[in-house]
Image 1: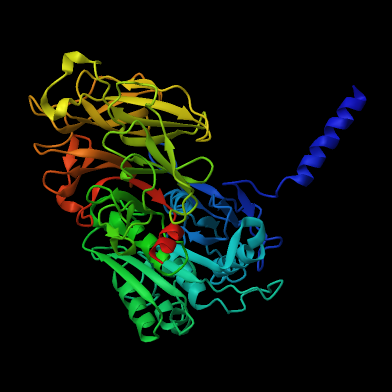
Image 2: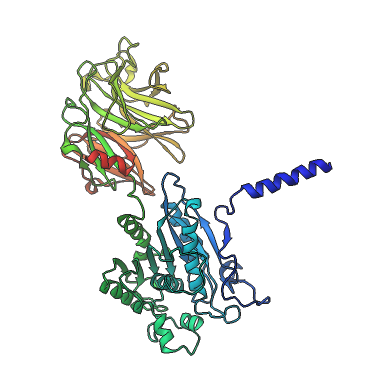
Length: 597
């Protein structure tokens, strides 16, 4: 037992040495030795509690820390931001203006570090006016020193502050070169950008937040000290570019704080963007209600436009024109609503296989192997479909003919094939609509030239060997144009009811827990009293959009899923003229950039 215990201790010591010195969302000490400290054993950090006993703030900070929220991207160096919560220099609103903000930055790809800075106090500081600035400068230097460890870009280190935290963020943005402590090296403390949300900027009477002024500078501060900490007076041409947010009806910190800082930046030709809201008061954090809820989205766009965030993924639409003779057409969109043709609406790939050598209904997906896989309709009356793959949507493999219905003597066609990838089994399911003469006679009709489709499928892992073709969906009516997406509950199939008598010609949905079914009975129509076909769906900003071909009207439409059902948003979308039955997929912006070339 003695030897076993010794071995266990050695293992623990090894792990302690081997593991990183921090873990995600844990606090790490900011200083090895805090500068200008006065020892006060009885002065200890304490929480502020609300009526329910929840901790809503931190008082009497003696040990400054950074709480780490690293962005997930490992393929490139990430921008980072230090977060300075507000609280009038009397406490830190560490959750609403700290952790919640950090989680938002993390979600958009920016690493965030919540700074628990010391609050000004003559009890624990030799000079309380510089204590918070010391912490802010050291925080920025710490991120640059440990940039490799945390996968950060040292040239994209910013600061965000709320209220009095905004004053601290503005102070380190204007006084980053002040020698307020002996730095261990020459690492710069200048932020590359600053984001100031309802900030205290000035210490001047009549505009300042009195509590912040007295807590930081004391009740009898000199005019020189007040001017020194009025950040609108400290701006120069080297002040970092800034994003400002304020509510006009802010009674705690007058909007003039942001206005004056904006003008000072403008006068020094420092890039600045400001968003003023009619209402919102003070302390709305990431936004509570009204228009100020939009500031995070505006901030994200600002970060993208200034190069601190890569351009977000965009969308590509694959479609055909005419009868599909000239092949694959592509359009792109940044928001999923406005679509523009690529390559001046010329074909990217000319069809080469099948009886009629057409390329109708092109469906493209990104596979688990990193390739884009495409299938399409090659003919009105063939027993197979076309297939090709690509790394970039520009250069395509040799086209192949997949004889998926060759075993059925009475199969008349294979229309509108699509692919859905099952990540769990790493399997591709290819499915399409076919009519087999003599089957499903109960819905046989002389209309539509006697076509009476059902949805069939096969599966493959490599597009070389395929499982036996099977029936996927028999809804009890003539059905075509199935398109399946994975959602929160399983799989949803969008489909066209092709019945002409009595007329349907609309889109419906069916669901299943498994990709290969069984699928439920078809729903009521999700489209209006117009003929629709070729549905393709994607989730954008948390909402499902379904695009479809209004083929009798010769234009494209869309519906959006809401809490009340499906809302027609056809008037909000625009597609290249002549777009026919396409599919949508999300792609990196770099792919769109190459397609544009």
